[in-house]
Length: 81
Image (tube, rainbow, N blue to C red; front, side):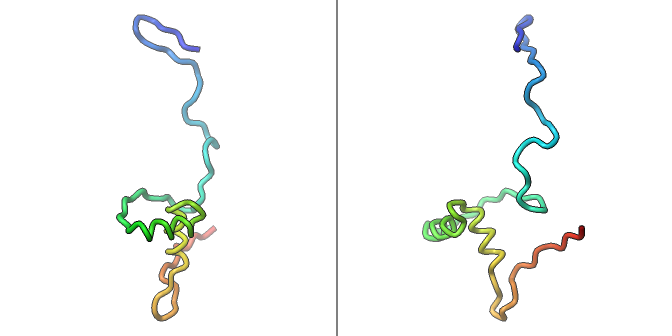
């Protein structure tokens, strides 16, 4: 409930941060927001590869990429339990 007192608004105890609230993390490490410039054809293919999500398509491509020697290009960081 909201009360107005001399041009100030006081709100009840609704909203705000709560432990356990929100979407669960999909990765073990924090994600960083960056801006990239890609040709339209790359965006279309990566979006398709990511099942409609461009970021997922890029992450999947990175995880599946190999070097010319046949070794994985990306080695995920070790996370000891």
